[in-house]
Structures are given as C-alpha cells and as structure tokens.
Length: 203
Image (cartoon, rainbow, N blue to C red; front, side):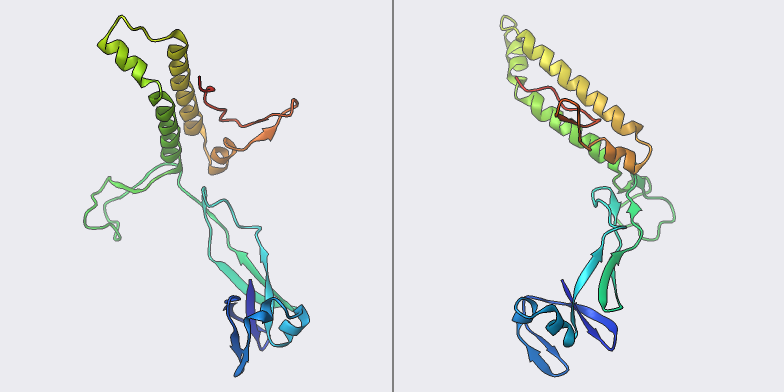
C-alpha cells in the first residue's frame, strides 16, 4: 500500500495498479514495483506502515477506519479503539429515531454474538443428525425395523454436546471469553483442542 505525501503531509492513499500524476508529471505504474524506495519517496510516494495494535477480529469487534499520518519520513496507518459487538440481541426501543418503518419496538435491531453462535452450533448438530434421520423415519413407519444402538447413542451424544456448547456460549460474560472458546491450544500429547470441544466423531 502506498500513499502520496506533499509538503510533509499525508495527502491520500494511491492506487498502485495504475500510473499517477504528481505536480503535472505523469508517472507509470512501474513506479511502485521497479523504482527504489528512495526514488519513489523523492517524488512523494511512500509505502504505508500499518500499526495493527488496535485492530481486532472482525468476527467479534467493529474496527474503526484506518487513520493515516506522515511523520519523520514515514507514512503510518492505524486503527482507533475497536468496539465489541453486542453479546445479546439489541432490540428496537421506543424513541429510536433510526427505526425503519417496517420495524416495531421489540424487534431485533442487531443480532448478538451469542444467538448467532448458538444458531451455528444447532445448525451443525442438525446437519449431523439429519444423516441418520432415515433410521428414525423407518422405525416410525415400521416398528419392526429398530434403530441401531450405535446410531441412537450417537444422536443422543450430538444433542448433548450441542446443549453443552450452547451453555458454554451463554456463560461467556465478555466478547473475549466467547472468542476464547474457539481458540485451539496444543496439549502435552501434541493434539490441539479448544474449550468448546467438538461434536462426536461421525459413525
């Protein structure tokens, strides 16, 4: 990423896929690839150094736009303080001026992380269970066809694990605690596990 600097001040981010006009001089796009750093900077083109200290996982946080500045021969870009996304659903309230005409007080304004993550867990569980639904349907229509015990056990274990996962998600009191449920760490035996654990291995 490159930026244009003039009079010791950041002007704008430039498109490195095409040439650029600086002070009525046309420069080819090769300025970004074939020119040396010193040659580029001599005409005001600087490579941007990004400071990602404040940038956080967009799954869990809303990051600010990047702010750019030029100082001591360096163009830097940095993010402001990120805002954690809500854990629970945010509802429209009486007096919300931005409430759309087709919404009502009490409708969901913004989906929270917990409901979204629990929905993913339940969707995954449903996908795992659906592969064996035909055993249940067959048994319902013909009770002489029993459901294999390993299938029944597996289906029970999937539902149990889904409930456990949803409980763990519900128990997270901060966004970082929720995020940590999905972070894998290496164990003494060389395997990698996460606090949320996994669904039972498929049959």
